[in-house]
Image (cartoon, rainbow, N blue to C red; front, side, top):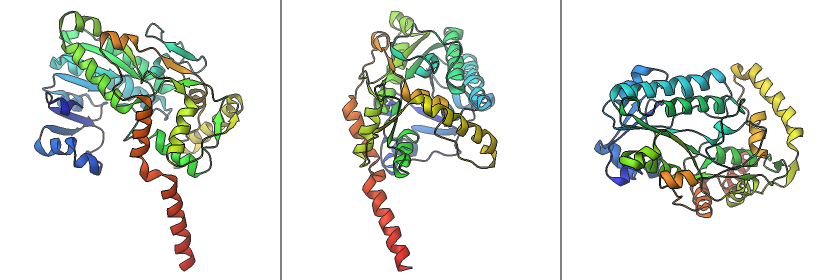
Length: 353
C-alpha cells in the first residue's frame, strides 16, 4: 500500500534472514520494488538496539508492527520483544530524529479475560490484570509509545486492529483448516452468540497509512492525532462463530454445530497448557487450546471506531462480506476437495504398493 502511493521508499525490517515472497508477490508490486531497489530488506532482532538503530537510519517514519505469536504465553519472550524491543525502537527514533512512529497495538490491551467488551471506545482503561502475557506486554509497549510523543519532535500514535484476517494469514485460517481436517471443528465454545469485531488485512494497512498521513499533516490535524490510541475494525460486528463458519463453509468444511460451555473447556485447557510447560522443551507443539484462548473465543469483543474516523480519517475500504470472500479465495489450496483428493491419491498409492 505504501508503494502504490508512490511517495515512499520502503525498508522492511524483520527477524528472518531473508524475505520470502509468494509467487504472486514476486510477480507483483513488492517483487518489482525489491528488484529495483525501491524496497530494501534488513534482518533485525528488536532486542538488539544496534540492529534497530541501523535499520532506522535515514527513516522519516517508522511503523512498528513486530510481535511474537500471541498464542505463545511465555512472559519473558513477550516482554523482551513487546516492551524492551519497543523501548529500543522508541529510543532509536528519538536519537535519530525520526519524525513519526506508528505502533501496531491490540484491542487486547483493555481485555481482562473475564468481562465482555461491547462497543468500547478508547476511554476504557487498561485492566489491573490482563488475559495473557501478550496482552499485558502489548499494553506496556503501547503506553511507552504514547508517553514518548513529542520527544525530540517525534509524533506517535497507536492503532489497535481487532482480529486481523485475510490473504497471507498464517495463524487463524490454517489453524481452522487443520482443526477441520482432524474433525475438531464441530464444536462451538460457549453459546455461539458472542459478537466480534474483525478487521480485513487491507483495512489494517489502510489504517496505518491514515495514521501516518494524519501525523504528517501538520497543524491542528497532527496535534489531534498524535499521542493517541485508536481502535480499528471493519465496523461490521458479527457473531464470532458465524464468521468462523462462513470461512469453513467457503473452504468446503462443515460449520461448527455442537455447543460446549466455556466453563467445561477451561479446566481441560489448563491441563493442556500445563502439559506443554512440562514437555514443550522436548518438542511438544504449542497448544491451540489454552485458557486465554477459550476466553477469547467465548466472550463478546466489539469496539467503537469513531475516534479513528474523526482524527485519522479512517473508514474501511473493503466491506466484511467482500473481505471474507477474498480470504476464502486466497486459501483455495486448502479447500476440502483438495484435502480429500490428496487422501484418495494416498490410498490408491498404498493399494498399488
